[in-house]
Amino acid sequence: MRLQVVLAHAGIASRRRSAEIIKERRVRVNGKVVTEPGFNVDSAKDNIICSGRIVTIRKRHVYMILNKPKGVVTTASDERGRRTVLDLLPKMDERIYPVGRLDKDTTGLLILTDDGQLANRLTHPRYEIERVYVATIKGQLKDEDRTKLMKGIYLNGRRTFPCNIHFLQKGIKKTIVKIILREGRKRQIRDMFEKAGYPVLQLERVAFGPLRLHGLKRGDYRPLDKRNMAELKRSVGLAKG
Image (tube, rainbow, N blue to C red):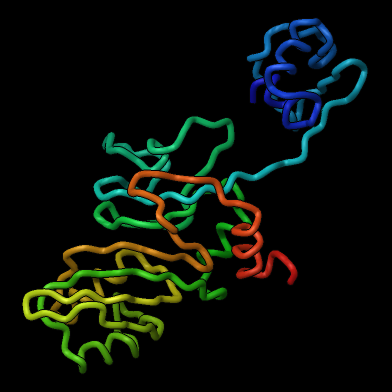
Protein backbone atom coordinates (compact mmCIF):
# COMPACT_ATOMS: atom_id res chain seq x y z
CA MET A 1 0.00 0.00 0.00
CA ARG A 2 1.26 3.52 -0.73
CA LEU A 3 2.67 5.33 2.27
CA GLN A 4 0.36 8.34 1.94
CA VAL A 5 -2.64 5.98 1.86
CA VAL A 6 -1.47 4.27 5.05
CA LEU A 7 -1.20 7.65 6.81
CA ALA A 8 -4.67 8.62 5.61
CA HIS A 9 -6.20 5.32 6.74
CA ALA A 10 -4.51 5.75 10.13
CA GLY A 11 -6.24 9.11 10.53
CA ILE A 12 -3.05 11.17 10.39
CA ALA A 13 -4.40 13.49 7.70
CA SER A 14 -6.06 13.52 4.30
CA ARG A 15 -4.19 11.86 1.43
CA ARG A 16 -3.11 15.23 0.08
CA ARG A 17 -1.90 16.48 3.46
CA SER A 18 -0.26 13.09 4.16
CA ALA A 19 1.76 13.50 0.96
CA GLU A 20 2.95 16.91 2.19
CA ILE A 21 3.89 15.48 5.58
CA ILE A 22 5.98 12.80 3.90
CA LYS A 23 7.76 15.36 1.73
CA GLU A 24 8.50 17.37 4.87
CA ARG A 25 10.67 14.43 6.00
CA ARG A 26 8.49 13.72 9.03
CA VAL A 27 7.96 10.01 8.28
CA ARG A 28 10.33 7.11 8.91
CA VAL A 29 9.86 3.55 7.63
CA ASN A 30 11.95 0.94 9.42
CA GLY A 31 14.18 3.68 10.80
CA LYS A 32 14.80 5.47 7.49
CA VAL A 33 13.28 8.77 6.39
CA VAL A 34 11.03 8.38 3.34
CA THR A 35 10.10 11.40 1.23
CA GLU A 36 8.16 9.69 -1.56
CA PRO A 37 4.35 9.58 -0.92
CA GLY A 38 3.96 6.63 -3.27
CA PHE A 39 6.55 4.52 -1.46
CA ASN A 40 5.14 1.00 -1.00
CA VAL A 41 4.86 -0.29 2.55
CA ASP A 42 3.25 -3.19 4.37
CA SER A 43 1.38 -1.67 7.31
CA ALA A 44 1.26 -5.06 9.03
CA LYS A 45 5.04 -5.62 8.92
CA ASP A 46 6.82 -2.29 8.47
CA ASN A 47 7.58 0.03 11.38
CA ILE A 48 6.14 3.40 10.39
CA ILE A 49 6.72 6.50 12.51
CA CYS A 50 5.19 9.90 11.78
CA SER A 51 6.40 12.87 13.87
CA GLY A 52 7.44 10.46 16.61
CA ARG A 53 4.12 8.62 16.60
CA ILE A 54 3.74 4.95 15.67
CA VAL A 55 1.35 4.63 12.73
CA THR A 56 -1.20 1.82 12.92
CA ILE A 57 -4.32 1.30 10.88
CA ARG A 58 -7.41 -0.68 11.60
CA LYS A 59 -8.41 -2.88 8.72
CA ARG A 60 -11.30 -1.36 6.81
CA HIS A 61 -12.95 -3.79 4.51
CA VAL A 62 -14.36 -2.80 1.13
CA TYR A 63 -17.93 -3.71 0.22
CA MET A 64 -19.27 -3.03 -3.27
CA ILE A 65 -22.42 -3.88 -5.17
CA LEU A 66 -22.29 -4.22 -8.96
CA ASN A 67 -24.99 -4.61 -11.59
CA LYS A 68 -23.15 -7.13 -13.73
CA PRO A 69 -23.65 -6.85 -17.50
CA LYS A 70 -23.89 -9.78 -19.89
CA GLY A 71 -20.65 -11.16 -21.34
CA VAL A 72 -18.48 -10.38 -18.31
CA VAL A 73 -16.99 -13.25 -16.28
CA THR A 74 -17.25 -13.37 -12.50
CA THR A 75 -13.60 -13.88 -11.61
CA ALA A 76 -10.76 -11.69 -10.40
CA SER A 77 -8.72 -12.59 -13.52
CA ASP A 78 -9.20 -14.72 -16.61
CA GLU A 79 -6.51 -16.78 -18.34
CA ARG A 80 -8.38 -16.44 -21.64
CA GLY A 81 -8.21 -12.66 -21.50
CA ARG A 82 -11.94 -12.12 -21.17
CA ARG A 83 -13.34 -9.05 -19.45
CA THR A 84 -13.93 -9.64 -15.73
CA VAL A 85 -16.11 -7.92 -13.15
CA LEU A 86 -13.02 -6.31 -11.60
CA ASP A 87 -12.40 -4.55 -14.91
CA LEU A 88 -15.61 -2.61 -14.26
CA LEU A 89 -14.36 -1.20 -10.94
CA PRO A 90 -11.76 1.49 -10.24
CA LYS A 91 -8.29 0.38 -9.25
CA MET A 92 -7.88 0.11 -5.49
CA ASP A 93 -5.20 -1.00 -3.06
CA GLU A 94 -7.42 -3.62 -1.45
CA ARG A 95 -7.71 -7.02 -3.09
CA ILE A 96 -11.42 -7.56 -3.55
CA TYR A 97 -13.18 -10.51 -5.14
CA PRO A 98 -16.75 -11.48 -6.06
CA VAL A 99 -19.00 -13.26 -3.57
CA GLY A 100 -20.22 -16.35 -5.40
CA ARG A 101 -20.65 -16.30 -9.16
CA LEU A 102 -22.98 -15.30 -11.94
CA ASP A 103 -22.26 -17.06 -15.21
CA LYS A 104 -21.06 -15.02 -18.17
CA ASP A 105 -24.51 -14.51 -19.70
CA THR A 106 -26.35 -13.82 -16.42
CA THR A 107 -26.78 -10.21 -15.36
CA GLY A 108 -27.60 -8.46 -12.12
CA LEU A 109 -26.61 -8.04 -8.50
CA LEU A 110 -23.12 -9.08 -7.46
CA ILE A 111 -21.33 -8.35 -4.18
CA LEU A 112 -17.56 -7.76 -4.15
CA THR A 113 -15.47 -7.49 -0.99
CA ASP A 114 -12.19 -8.30 0.72
CA ASP A 115 -14.03 -9.52 3.84
CA GLY A 116 -13.47 -13.27 3.73
CA GLN A 117 -15.58 -14.08 6.78
CA LEU A 118 -18.65 -12.33 5.38
CA ALA A 119 -18.13 -13.83 1.92
CA ASN A 120 -17.94 -17.35 3.35
CA ARG A 121 -21.13 -16.95 5.33
CA LEU A 122 -23.04 -15.43 2.43
CA THR A 123 -22.24 -18.43 0.24
CA HIS A 124 -22.47 -21.21 2.85
CA PRO A 125 -25.66 -23.31 2.54
CA ARG A 126 -26.06 -23.25 6.33
CA TYR A 127 -27.22 -19.62 6.29
CA GLU A 128 -29.71 -20.11 3.43
CA ILE A 129 -29.31 -16.57 2.12
CA GLU A 130 -32.17 -15.70 -0.22
CA ARG A 131 -31.32 -14.99 -3.85
CA VAL A 132 -33.98 -13.60 -6.17
CA TYR A 133 -33.83 -13.95 -9.97
CA VAL A 134 -36.02 -12.98 -12.90
CA ALA A 135 -35.82 -15.50 -15.75
CA THR A 136 -37.24 -15.52 -19.24
CA ILE A 137 -37.67 -19.13 -20.34
CA LYS A 138 -38.61 -20.69 -23.66
CA GLY A 139 -42.11 -22.08 -23.91
CA GLN A 140 -45.14 -21.99 -21.65
CA LEU A 141 -44.30 -23.24 -18.16
CA LYS A 142 -46.83 -25.82 -17.04
CA ASP A 143 -48.16 -25.73 -13.50
CA GLU A 144 -47.09 -29.30 -12.81
CA ASP A 145 -43.52 -28.59 -13.95
CA ARG A 146 -43.42 -25.46 -11.81
CA THR A 147 -44.52 -27.52 -8.80
CA LYS A 148 -41.82 -30.14 -9.41
CA LEU A 149 -39.12 -27.49 -9.68
CA MET A 150 -40.28 -25.80 -6.47
CA LYS A 151 -40.19 -29.08 -4.52
CA GLY A 152 -36.65 -29.80 -5.74
CA ILE A 153 -35.13 -31.93 -8.48
CA TYR A 154 -31.92 -33.90 -8.79
CA LEU A 155 -28.97 -32.17 -10.45
CA ASN A 156 -25.64 -33.97 -10.60
CA GLY A 157 -26.78 -36.48 -8.01
CA ARG A 158 -28.00 -33.95 -5.43
CA ARG A 159 -31.50 -32.68 -4.86
CA THR A 160 -31.98 -28.93 -5.03
CA PHE A 161 -33.43 -27.09 -2.04
CA PRO A 162 -37.13 -26.20 -2.25
CA CYS A 163 -37.64 -22.82 -3.93
CA ASN A 164 -40.43 -20.44 -4.88
CA ILE A 165 -41.36 -19.68 -8.50
CA HIS A 166 -43.87 -16.93 -9.33
CA PHE A 167 -45.30 -16.15 -12.74
CA LEU A 168 -44.63 -12.60 -13.92
CA GLN A 169 -45.74 -13.06 -17.52
CA LYS A 170 -47.29 -16.07 -19.21
CA GLY A 171 -47.00 -16.76 -22.91
CA ILE A 172 -47.01 -19.59 -25.41
CA LYS A 173 -43.53 -18.89 -26.78
CA LYS A 174 -41.94 -17.66 -23.57
CA THR A 175 -42.65 -17.26 -19.86
CA ILE A 176 -41.18 -14.80 -17.37
CA VAL A 177 -40.85 -15.96 -13.77
CA LYS A 178 -39.38 -14.79 -10.48
CA ILE A 179 -37.35 -17.45 -8.68
CA ILE A 180 -36.40 -17.32 -5.00
CA LEU A 181 -33.55 -19.66 -4.03
CA ARG A 182 -31.73 -20.32 -0.77
CA GLU A 183 -28.69 -22.01 -2.28
CA GLY A 184 -26.22 -21.01 -4.97
CA ARG A 185 -25.02 -23.90 -7.09
CA LYS A 186 -23.20 -23.25 -10.35
CA ARG A 187 -25.66 -22.58 -13.19
CA GLN A 188 -28.45 -23.93 -10.98
CA ILE A 189 -31.40 -22.07 -12.49
CA ARG A 190 -30.31 -22.71 -16.07
CA ASP A 191 -29.81 -26.42 -15.34
CA MET A 192 -33.11 -26.74 -13.47
CA PHE A 193 -35.21 -25.32 -16.25
CA GLU A 194 -33.18 -27.04 -18.96
CA LYS A 195 -33.84 -30.40 -17.32
CA ALA A 196 -37.55 -29.58 -17.14
CA GLY A 197 -37.60 -28.73 -20.86
CA TYR A 198 -37.56 -24.93 -20.67
CA PRO A 199 -34.25 -23.40 -21.80
CA VAL A 200 -33.42 -20.08 -20.11
CA LEU A 201 -33.28 -17.24 -22.60
CA GLN A 202 -32.42 -14.46 -20.14
CA LEU A 203 -31.51 -14.42 -16.46
CA GLU A 204 -30.99 -11.59 -14.00
CA ARG A 205 -30.35 -11.60 -10.24
CA VAL A 206 -32.33 -8.77 -8.68
CA ALA A 207 -31.68 -9.41 -4.98
CA PHE A 208 -29.14 -11.06 -2.69
CA GLY A 209 -30.19 -11.30 0.94
CA PRO A 210 -31.41 -7.83 1.98
CA LEU A 211 -29.70 -6.11 -0.96
CA ARG A 212 -31.54 -4.79 -4.03
CA LEU A 213 -30.29 -3.03 -7.15
CA HIS A 214 -32.50 0.03 -6.55
CA GLY A 215 -32.05 1.60 -9.96
CA LEU A 216 -28.34 0.79 -10.32
CA LYS A 217 -27.71 0.75 -14.08
CA ARG A 218 -26.13 -2.20 -15.86
CA GLY A 219 -22.35 -2.05 -15.48
CA ASP A 220 -22.50 0.48 -12.64
CA TYR A 221 -21.42 -0.05 -9.04
CA ARG A 222 -21.65 1.62 -5.65
CA PRO A 223 -20.19 1.04 -2.18
CA LEU A 224 -22.57 -0.38 0.41
CA ASP A 225 -23.72 2.18 2.96
CA LYS A 226 -23.86 1.58 6.71
CA ARG A 227 -27.49 0.51 6.66
CA ASN A 228 -26.85 -2.02 3.89
CA MET A 229 -23.85 -3.40 5.75
CA ALA A 230 -25.76 -3.74 9.02
CA GLU A 231 -28.57 -5.62 7.27
CA LEU A 232 -26.16 -7.87 5.39
CA LYS A 233 -24.10 -8.78 8.45
CA ARG A 234 -27.22 -9.33 10.53
CA SER A 235 -28.51 -11.80 7.92
CA VAL A 236 -25.50 -14.08 8.57
CA GLY A 237 -25.17 -13.54 12.31
CA LEU A 238 -22.27 -11.09 12.26
CA ALA A 239 -24.14 -8.17 13.80
CA LYS A 240 -26.56 -7.85 16.67
CA GLY A 241 -30.04 -6.47 16.47
